Length: 296
Image 1 (cartoon, rainbow, N blue to C red):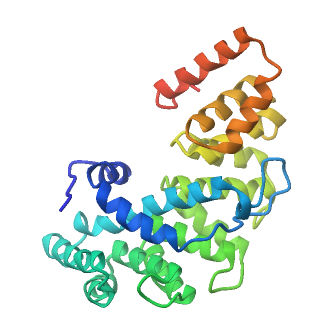
Image 2: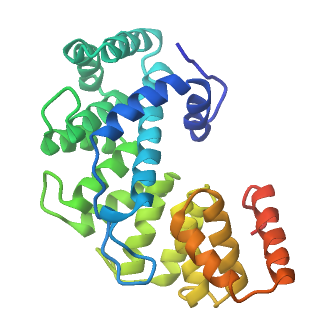
Image 3: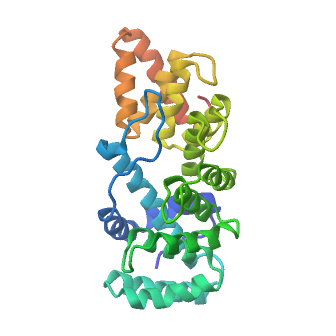
């Protein structure tokens, strides 16, 4: 059993993904196979597009699933100690074999005892119909129990349910409330979504300055989609002074992270630059990355 220790919660996801690649790949591939790209938001600006026909949406789904996989393993590290770890591990072994009722038999009691990681795990299973009927309302129940305990992953998950109208009428204002609680704890996906909400005026008054704030926080955690959105804000002068160099930098970094839209926009700006200008901005991008996003 993987058991990374001595790390802050913010580092656990990365450590688990690094230490347990087979764990991540197994669950991630199963979960991702059930997903279809969906339209996250409907923004009118140039960088908004339907995810139903865009590979980036699949990449974001995959990234979110990887994060979810890390979250479900926290039961082995936090909360009720060794007994919880044993129960979760038994459930996981059953899950690996496709014995979903046995997995649930271990996970449900943990969730009912208030373990937020088990609650988030069950929410995800019901959200995507993995080993159980696909029941958005049941997913909401478990996300809400975790969210109301102050868990950032649960708050983000609940926000997405309200945002997309899954199992409940779409309610952007409530989505913003849950995204905010999660984003303030540092959840980068919540920060991105909150930026989009302020950018587009969904559930809140449109506010480009606040959108830049949340895009920036997510971008500096390495979220490529947020980096692209932040580049758009700099390119167009929305919420920040217009700055084509900084826009190119963020597009370049997003492209390096695999974001197709960032790459497209970087190439568009590069087509009007000479070799010296490109070299200068590449150095600017390298400095940003090398500094851990502190010198950007």
